[in-house]
Length: 320
View 1 (cartoon, rainbow, N blue to C red):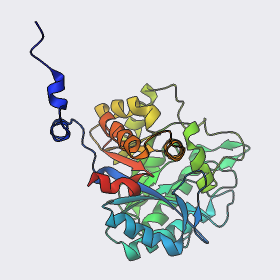
View 2: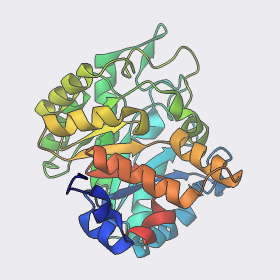
View 3: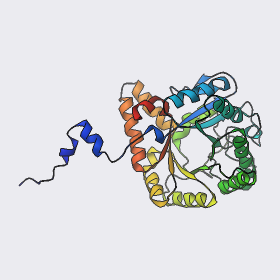
View 4: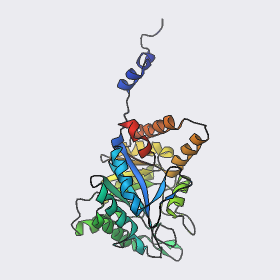
C-alpha cells in the first residue's frame, strides 16, 4: 500500500511553496559593500557592475541603495597614498572619513559600517604593521584603534575590523569607550579565512600583499573548531555582531557559529563568489537572477542573520 504521507502535496503551486517555505530572505537581511576613492569613478573590471566611486558620487549611490530598500552599507576606502604606518587610514580628511560624511549628507538614515584594516593603506599591503617582513600583532592594535575612532568621529554608525589580528576587538572597544562612543557597535570579521575567493576585491582596493601572504593571521580553511574559538574570543572582547567570511565554501561554519552564539551572525558573500556568478551569467551558462536568489537563500538557511553582498542593489527589489 502506498504511504499516506506524500511530501509532493506541499509543492504543488508557487503560493503553497511560499507559505510552507522554511527560510525567508528579505531586503532587510542585506548589507551593500561599496568602495570610495579620491578621484573619478572607475568600473572594477573583475566585478562587473561594481565601481570605485568618487567622493562626488558616493552620496547618490547611498540614496539609490536606500530607495531600493537597503538599510545598511559597508564602506571601503581607496586612499591617495600609502606608507608603512597606514597614516592615510586615520587622517581626519581620509577617504573613508570624507566618504562617510558625503553619505550622511545625502542619506543620513542609512546605517554605515566601515571596514577597519590597514591593507589598503600600507605599502606592504598587509593587515597590520610590518617589521622585518612580519606583521607585528600588538604594535598594530593602536593603529587599528585610531582608524576605528576616526571613522566614528566622521559619523560611522558601526566599525568592522577585518584584520584578524589577536586582541583587536578589545583594543577598539576600549578606545571607543574611552572616547565616549560606548554605543557604537563592533561588527567583527571573527572567522575570516585565508581564501582564494578574495582576488577581485584585491583589484578593487589595490590591497594585495606585496610579499608573502596573509596565512599567519587569516584562518586556515581546513579548520572549523578554530572558528568557534575566534568567535568566543571576539564576543568576550566586546563584538556585537560576528562575521564569517567567505560564505559559500563556509556554510558549515555559519551553521556552527549560529548554533554556538546568541548574537547576530553576518556572512560575507565575497568578490570571487560574485564574479563567478556574474561571468557565468554573462556567458549564458546560468540564469543569474535565479542563481543569486538561491545563493543568498542558502546563506540565510545556513544561519546568517545578515548578508553582505555585492548583489544587494541589483536584487533588493526581488526581496521586498
